[in-house]
Each structure stands twice: as C-alpha cells, then as structure tokens.
Length: 313
Image (cartoon, rainbow, N blue to C red; front, side, top):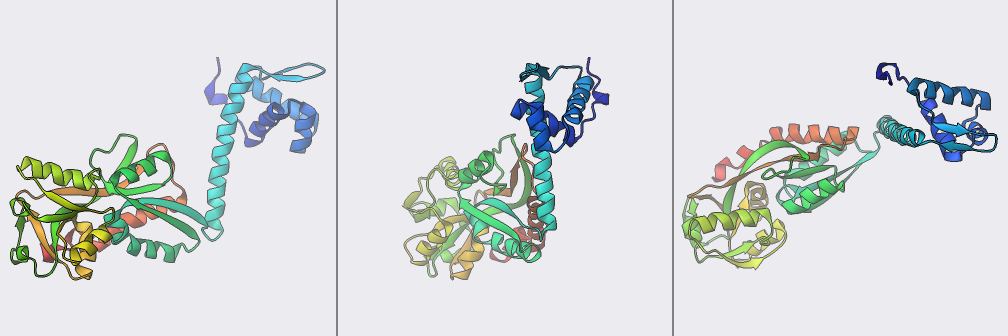
C-alpha cells in the first residue's frame, strides 16, 4: 500500500525518471542531467522506494521500463509540463507582461463595447497581444469549446455545463428604422406592426434570428426576412439606405445612433437575452486572461451598458 502522505517528489527526481525512460540507459540519462551515474541510480531507487514499485528492470546490458514505470512517467510528464507552463507565464508576466489572449465575441459586442475595454487593457499591458474573433453565438461557443479562444462573449442561453459563465447585462431588443420611416412616429413598436415590413436580418441559423422567429411564430406572425446579412454593421448600413428595418439587441444601438438611424423599443412582448462571459471550466487561464476577465467585468459595470440606452427606450 502506498502512503500518499509520504510521497514527496522533487522536479529533479521526476526529470531523472523521465530521462532514464527516454534514453533507456542510466549512463546516457546521467550525462544529459549532468550528474554522476551513482547519484542518478540512488535518485531512482528513492522514488521506487517511496512508491513501493519497480519502475525499471535493470540488466548488465539494458534498462527496461515496467508497466508501473510507464504510468509514472506519464504522470511525471504532465506534472513537469504544468510546471513549465506556470513558469513560462510567470516569466512572461515579469518580462514586460508579454503574452497573448484570444477572445471570441458576438458581433454586437465586438463592434461596440469591446474596443473601449480592449483599449484600456492595452494601456496597462502593451506587451499582451489580443486576437478577436467575431461571429454569431454558435461560433463563439465552438471557439471556446475547441480551445481556439480563451474567453467568449456571448448570450448565456442554453450554455453547456462544460462552460463557466458570468452574466454581464440583460439586453432588450429594439427596432432600427431609417429616418422618415412611417413607424418612426411611434414611441414603441409592437410585434404586430412588423407584419408586412421588409426586414434586414441575420442568417436563420443565428441565435438572434431564432429568438426573433420563435417570438413571431408564437404571436401568429409571418415576418418577411427579405434581406439576409452576416454582420450587424452591414445590417445597419442596409437600414440606413432605406431598403428595410431591422430588429437588433441593445449592443448594436450605439452604432445605429452614430449613423443617424431611429430606434424604438420592441414591445408586446418585450424580449431580451442575457449577455455574458464564458470560459472552459477545464482550461486554466493565463495571468493575462485572468486580468482581461477582471477588466471586462469592471469596465462593463463602469460603462453601464444596460442603462446606456434608457433615453432611447
């Protein structure tokens, strides 16, 4: 029986076991580790003694690793790799905070709130490279799940248990209109008023579009998605050209206002989605990623995104 409370291996001992396994020779391993062969032999014997297991079968001609040895070497490699990752992160942080963080974000955040937050982050950490992927909800989920992105900014509906999530704000939906549109006279726009209107919309497989279609069907409406685009920026430009109107979450309103569009709350019923931050539970964040997460939470509260558009509701 192994007494786990007595297991106390140093990194040097783990490296010694790994070197013997890699080279299949005590002599070659000792040369690589810059230690004498007797010292290496005693190191391996100490580890075997603590484990109560034989890791290597030695003969005068060769060294063969046992099954127990293979399992222990695999464990040693994982531990040493984790230590190396930690030391690298610490070194990068000390060395002018050089590193990289990858963010995957829904478009309504990537083109509005995120640039301001990133600008402040870069002021404090100029040595950290930030890569931003923008897309629909499904893209964000897949990027974080696959490890392509460290952090995701998306809507928190139907998030799988493999993700950790932090709500940031609730975003209500609005109708965006070109100046002079007949619906502009209304302070609010009901779903029924959208019947027969030409809409500029996101693709049918986007979460935003699915929510809009589901609400319309429940209300007994058949919306006319006459023009389909893949970017909120493109959508708003089409609205500005006068070819239709659009239904957008609050995150897109600042850009709509900046190009002179009119905005009205969408009511009866009002629909909303919770926007938040997701990470993969099993994946540890680098110090740079942790700092960015803190920055996102802090800046989001400071910007008060949810109340920013009270004047246009």
